[in-house]
Every structure is written in C-alpha cells, then in structure tokens.
Length: 304
Image (cartoon, rainbow, N blue to C red; front, side):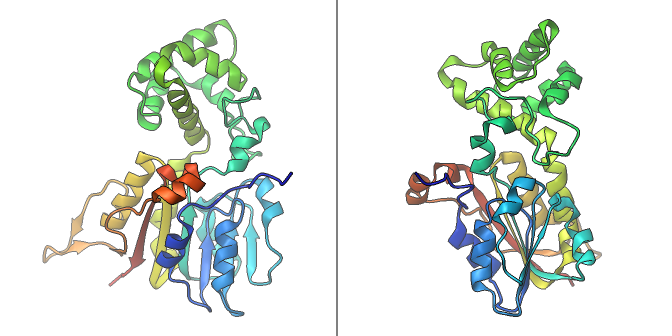
C-alpha cells in the first residue's frame, strides 16, 4: 500500500503559467510543504536558475529535493526578505505562496488539526512555537472567541459557539480535539455539524499560527523583493485571505484604500494578471476535492 500524498497542489498548471518562469530566474516558494510546486518550478528552470523554498514545519524538510539549484529555509514566510539577504539574493523573479493546509497536517492525528481523531489540541505549524490551540482557548475570553469565530469561521452564531466553549472550560480544561468538539457541538447546526466543526477548527488554526498577519507581512514586503516585472502568485482558501490578497494587488495595502498622486492617478506597485480569481474546474475538484475552495490571484510588479 502506497504512502498517502503529503499534499496535492491545487491549480498547478495555472500557477506555473502565472509565474511565467524564466529558465535563469530566481524564485521563492514561500510554502514548500510537500514540495509539489517546487519540483514543478525546478523542472522549468535551467542550470543557472535558482529556487529558495520556505516552510516552518520541520516535517517538510524530508521532502526537500537534492538539487544544487534548490535551497530550503526552515522559517515562516513572513521572514522571506531577511533570509533572501542572508543567502545573497537582492531581488527575485517570482514569489509563490499556497496558503492551503497540507494533507499531512490533517492526516497526522497527533498534530491536532482535525476533529476526526482524538489528539492533543496543538495546531502549530511550527512545532517549536509556544502557543498551542489549547493554550489559546485557555487565554481567550468570550469576546475574543466570538470575534475569532465571526471573522475566521463564518459561523451564523459565533457568540453561541464562544459561550459553549466558555461553559465547557469552566468544568474542565479543553486539551484535546475531541474535548473541543464535544464542547462546541451543542452550539452547531446538527444538519451542518461537520462543516461548522471544520470551520471552528480552521479559525483556531488561523489564530494559533497568525496566518493573516504573516500574509500581510509577505505582501507588504513583496515589492522590495521582486525585480521590475516580477510576479507574485498567491493561492487562498478562506474569504479573509482572498480579500487581503485582492486588496493588495488592487491598491497596495490590506485595507484596499486606493491612494492617488497629485494628478489623480492611482498609486500602486501592482498590475493585476488575474482580475478575477482562478478556481478549479469540475475535473480537478473530482480528483482533488480540497481544491474546491482554492482561489488563485497573480500580479506583476510595475513600480514607476
């Protein structure tokens, strides 16, 4: 029996097309994971090309290819600019970030990302980070939890879910995935329990790993890392992620505020390659159901 896939990249042909890879170019894979995107990029690079990949999860190191053109950096992608300088790279031709969670994280029960198996409530991408999901639930009050579930879980009644967790926490600490599932279950719609449960776990994962903050940091730094005409390609899987990327590529900031110069011309470093997000077709979704929620946006640096 073959090993399960670490991760199947969504929208891979479209991603490579948007990157427009130059054989002698320098590229960044900000979310290495199982290495699917990196291997596809390396296939298109010539002997003088270079790829620098980032991943904060120590498990990802095992997927690194033995290729002299490839450099693996174990770090959160919010620190890409610092590590590029460390490796003697001033600017690159393209930056790719696939923000989807790998199969590996859901299938490895001990990581605590899924409610399908009982395990410590962890959810850390970086296993050396101090904040676990259990510690977050211990610290957050009802207002924090309500805001978290409203923003990142899209629950119809986030306050109800927050109250359920607070009530359960008052009886005993919530330390495992099953304990969290049991605590929040009374607040969920029985007809859509699995979907809403997944949304609760998703919200906690986003908070534990500061995912939106990391994305904003990467996009803010991207113009200083790309060459003129360089490209940024981002795959998102959540409405908040997609909104941040859309706003940056449209206006140059996370809020979407369009600044104008003295003559009323919009000031932005980006030319959008994808006016609307690219999504998976029915054939891809059938082969890879997790691609259903993927949205790809790409833009080119066009600084004056």
